[in-house]
Image 1 (tube, rainbow, N blue to C red):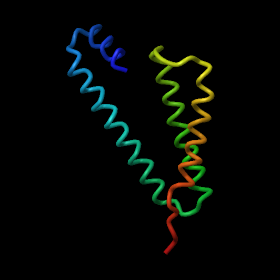
Image 2 (cartoon, rainbow, N blue to C red):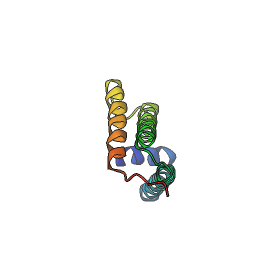
Image 3 (cartoon, helix red, strand yellow):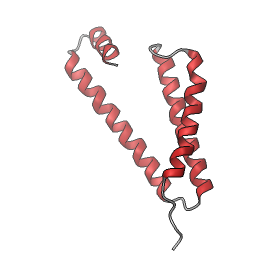
Image 4 (tube, rainbow, N blue to C red):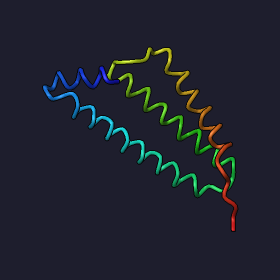
Length: 106
């Protein structure tokens, strides 16, 4: 990752350290927003099948965004890894749904 940031910094003619700091800040912000969205929707689900479906759809979508971003920048993974990554995202969503607490209707 640092090599990619260093390459971008040299192409644009900006110092490496501030560019790396911006990359970490952006990644942290996006991760926080995505986590808040997941937590907000998850906290309102009261039945496990709905929670499982939401988690599988959410994490599969995150995996698809990762695959798309990796393909767009042409750095990183081979095309043969796209399907296993998406399947792993789906399986992760299912496993997360099992570990999350289910809210009881009051």
